[in-house]
Image 1: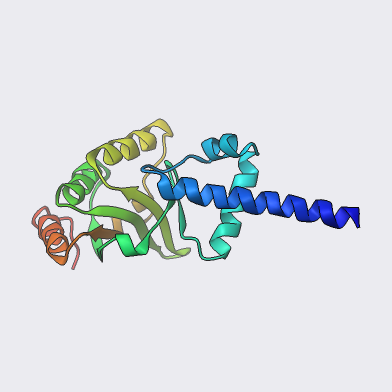
Image 2: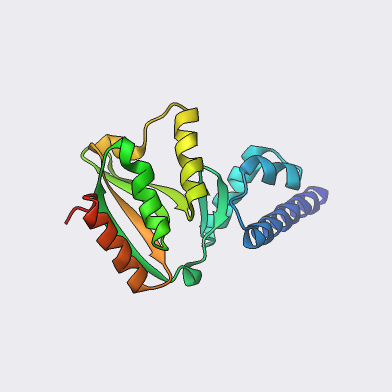
Length: 181
C-alpha cells in the first residue's frame, strides 16, 4: 500500500515537472538547452530526454534543435512551403540568409537518401544570428551538413507570414540558382 502511494507521488512529481517544462517552453523566446532544463528541474539530462519523449507521445510538438528544445506552434507559423534546393557548402550562409532576409524561417532540412530514406532535422533558423550560430556549430564540431549525404540536394520547410513572402523567397532562390524545379 505504501509503495503505491510512493509511486503515485513520484508520478505526480513527474507530471508536475513536465507541466513546468511546457510552461518554460511556451514562454521561451529562444530554444532551451536540455542541460538548462535539467538544472531548472533538479533532474538529470536523461530524465529531461525521457520527459520530452513522454510529452511528444501526448501530442506536444516539441522540436529538438542544435540550440535546445522549442515548442512549435502550428497556428503561429502562417504560411508554409517546401523548397527543393541544391548548393555547395560554401553557399549555405547565402542560401539561409536569403530565406531569412525575405521574411522566412527555416523549420528544417530534409534529404532523400537512397539507402536510409528521408532524413529530416529541425533547424529553426529565424535570423542572420541563427544562421551564424548554425554555421559556427558545424565548424566547432568539425561536422558536415546533412545535405552532404546527397551531394548538396535537399529540402527546406520554410514558414512566413504570407504567400507573398514565400513567393519572394522562391524568386530569390531561383535567381541565385539554388532552386531545383
